[in-house]
Structure formats: C-alpha cells, structure tokens
Image 1 (tube, one colour):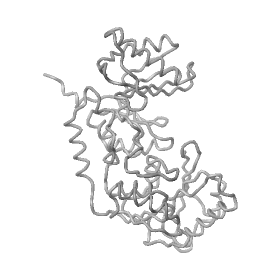
Image 2 (cartoon, helix red, strand yellow; image 1 turned 30 degrees about the horizontal axis):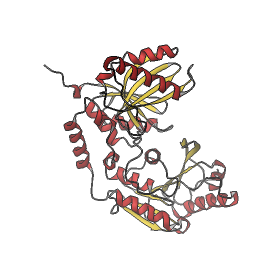
Image 3 (cartoon, rainbow, N blue to C red; image 1 turned 120 degrees about the vertical axis):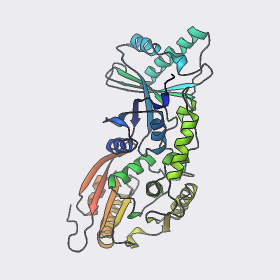
Image 4 (cartoon, rainbow, N blue to C red; image 1 turned 180 degrees about the vertical axis):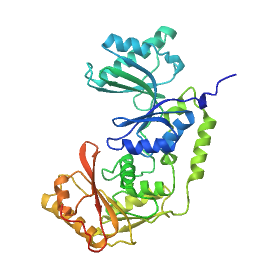
Length: 391
C-alpha cells in the first residue's frame, strides 16, 4: 500500500527575528508541532505537510519555514561540493525550473556566504549537466525553488525554503512613505505585551498602521498569510498537494471573525500618516475593526478603564536631542495622567531619550529594529496613588 506522505512527519526549521524565538515557539505549539526546540533566531520542530502549510499561513512571527534535506560537515571547498552532490537534485527540481541559494555563514573556515552559495550552486548545476547534458538556470529574484544553506562552525544544514518570499511581507501594505515597522516585529511586540485580544488596544503614534493591523488580525483570528499575493515556495515542490493546501486555506478563511472582538484605536498627528494607515487598513478589510483619528496623543485620554498602549515613537538621530528628550518626557506625563489602569509599551532605539519618560519600567525586552538595538519598555500605570516611581 502506498504511504500517505502528507501524514508523515519531518524536521522543520522556522526562522524569526532576535528576541521573538519564544513567541514563535508558542505559535508552533498551537499548530501541534512536536519536538519544539528554541534556537538563535530560529525554532526547530517536527511536523507533517499540512502543518508546514499551516505554519506559512498562520505564524505571525515567522520569517521563513524551512525543510532541512541534508546535514553535513564541510571542512573545505572539495568537501562542501561533494556533500551537496550527494543529494539527487532531480528528485527536488526539474531541469526547466529556476533556483537560488541563500547562504548564511558564521564561525567557519569559509568567510563569505556568497562564495559558499556559488560553490553549492556549481555542485547542483554540474550534477544536472553530467546526468542530462543541460543545466538549470539561477534566478535570484523569483526562483521556482529557493534553497537555504546555513553553515555554523563548518556544520552545514541544507534546506528547502517553503515560504518563497519572506513571510513578513504580508501583502496588505499599499504604500510606505516612512520606514515602517517590520510586520513580524510588530506582531512579536504585541505578543510580548501579553495583550488579551479583547481589551482596548491603542497605538497613539500609529504611522502607517502596522501595530493596529497586526493587533486586529490577532483579535479577529485572521491568518496573516491570507493577504499574500505571491505563491508560496512549496507550491512549486514536486510533492505539492494542492487539495491539502486548499483545505488549509479555506479552514483559515472560515476561522476569521467578522464582528469586532476588541476596541482598536490609532492616533497620529500627521494627516499623511493617517491617510497611509487608512489605505493599508482598508486593503486588509479591517476598516470596521480599527478606529483612526488624527490627534495629538498628548491631548488624548483613555477611552476605557483598562487596556494596552503600544507605541514606537521616533528615535532617529535627525531629531534634535532637546526635542526628543521633551517628546519622551511628554509621553511619560501623558501616560501617567491620562492612561491610569493601562499597561504601556514603548518600543525605542533611543535608550538615552527613553530615560525622560520618568516612569519605572516593570520589564525591558531587548529587540532589534533592523540593525538598531532597541528595547521594549513596559510601564504599569496604576490607578490612584500607586503611580510609577522615578526610574
């Protein structure tokens, strides 16, 4: 009897951003993955084909979902070349398919990831040429098959990338007239806030609306992958099960709630940002879920007894230090006076300016915004006399 390969478990590695590994592990747990192990910017687990499809569709903090195909040690160039050739690449791709290799190299005798990916590419191309007399083409931009080569201390993991385009590119963004927050980072920050997805959620400096949209997707139980325009990497695999993926997709659509589950509010002083946010929110079909208002945060007050405030105030060097220090002081004053009973989270890359908030932090989570080292600072805003003391 033929084995049902869609039910068979295999190893899966899911990559994420530094600091979000535990959040991702919880997401994989919710998908019933087995043998979950937290690593550095990645979580490994075991699951079947359905769960691989689900991870791509549902994981809010995943960047890529990889399926490892070979592990080996490569001491030198010859070793690497020969090990890559031990895989029968005709089982993975056809001659007419394009491919690309993303390589990450650390603490190894090889210094350049570009050189390593070139070497691996040559091994694959040479194998095809020897077998068929022809070679498959490389397409760096939109390959049919994307491979991932991870080398650490000369130990290599060669994987198939099931995601294709990075999963942070959800597909709901229309315009980004600012440097917007990465969607995976935004979703991770909201998860780290411990927001219950029912109480009031406010982003008082909402920019183009990434926190608001990610919060709404969580509250409405909408899979972030449902907005994606580009096909997933696994849709070109030889074992692609179209009926199975169709089932995963329609199940995800059915789980989405249409009635608002929480009060989600965004403010921004800048009319252009509000317009950009409105466009993105409408593109995600969330205009009935999220309330937007052009307003100065320092003149607002809490609309309910309790909730969560999450913000990513400016922290770049272009703003003069006097202004930025005053900005953070005003943030602290407004939170203390107008948002008692709330938990506030300030995500910033300017730790000096953040001292001007003047409230005691109850938690400080190290994260990165691109290459900028940041902190997610938590302030518990007690009612009445128990106000946060000086930091």
